[in-house]
Amino acid sequence: MSDQLLTVRDLTKSFRVPGGRKGHDRLCALDGIDLDLARGQTLGLVGESGCGKSTLARTLMMLERPDSGTVTFDGIDPFALKGKELLEFRRRVQMVFQDPYASLNARMSAGDIIAEPWRTHRGLHPSRKDRDTRVRELLDLVGLGAKAMEKFPQEFSGGQRQRIGIARALALDPDVIICDEPVSALDLSVQAQVLNLLNDLQQQLGISYVFISHDLSVVRHVADRVAVMYLGRIVESGPTDAVFDQPSHPYTGALMSAAPKLDAVDRADRILLKGEVPSPLNPPSGCRFRTRCWKATDVCAEELPPLATDSAVPGHAAECHHPLTEDRAALSQSA
Image 1 (cartoon, rainbow, N blue to C red):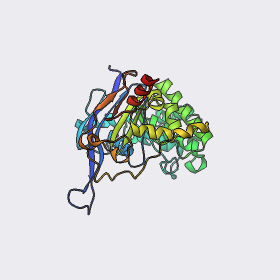
Image 2: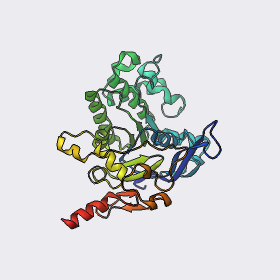
Image 3: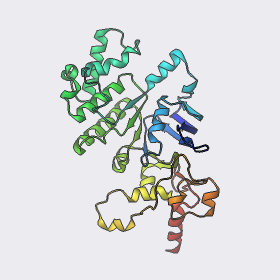
Image 4: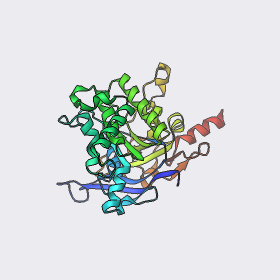
C-alpha cells in the first residue's frame, strides 16, 4: 500500500457562461491543477474568493467531472468506476460543509442525520440495532454523547452542529474528508474546539484532510502542506512552515503579508497589490498573476512560468519567472 493516497495531475474544469460573447463564454475554474495528498496528512488549500477552491473540492467529490487531467485515488481512477465500485469509492471520500446551520436537516434528529448515509450504503450496518449502536459511538467520538441522539439541530449550538456534521462524515469510515471552511461560521473559542477534534480524529483514525480556508492562522495550525491557488492554478505548494515563512511566489508573499500580526513593526513589510483579480472568462496570458505583480516583466506575459523549486526545502515549489527566493539569495550574498 502506497503512502500516497490522492494524486491530481493537470486537472482542468471550465463552465459555459450563457450569453457570453464568442471566445469568452467559458469560465476556466481549474487550469492544470497538480496536487498530492498522503495518508494521514492534512493539505491546506488557500486563496482568494473565486480562485477555484470549491470547484476543486467538488471535483474531488465527483460532483463535477473534469474536462481533462487525471485523478488517482489509492491507485484507482474514480471517474472510470461504475455501479458497485463507484458506490464503494463514494464512501471513501466525504465532506464537512461550511455552514453548520444549512448543512443539517432541521426535521431530522441528530441520530437520523448521522445514520442517513447508511440508507445508501446498506451493507455497513444492516440492522437497526447496529445502526443505533454505531450512532452512539460516533456521538461519543465527537464529544456530544449518546443523549444528543434524539435532539434536533435547532437544539444545538453552532459548534455542536458542526460536530454532528463531522460525525455524519465519519459514518462511512472514509479515508479522506474534504473540509470546506469548516470553522469560518463559528466563534473563535468554538473554532479551537472543532480544530482540536479534527486533529484528534486524524491521530486516532488516520484520516487525511483537504482543508479549505481563508483564515491563514487556522491553516498554519492544522496543515502539514499548503497549496496556494490563484485564478484556477496552484501557484505555490510545499510544507506549511516553508510556505508561510519563506514564500516563493509573489502572490503568496502578498497573501502572507496581509495576515494580522501582533508586532506593529512588521506592518512595514505589508505588500499592497494594485488592481483587481482578472476575470476567469479572459485570464491573462502567461502568468495569471502578472497584471498585479510588481516583479512582472515581458517574459511573464509571453510564457507560462516554470516550476521554480526551493533547493533548501524539498517539495517546496512555485510557478514563477521571478521567485522571491531569488531576492532573498541576492540579499544574503550582498550581506
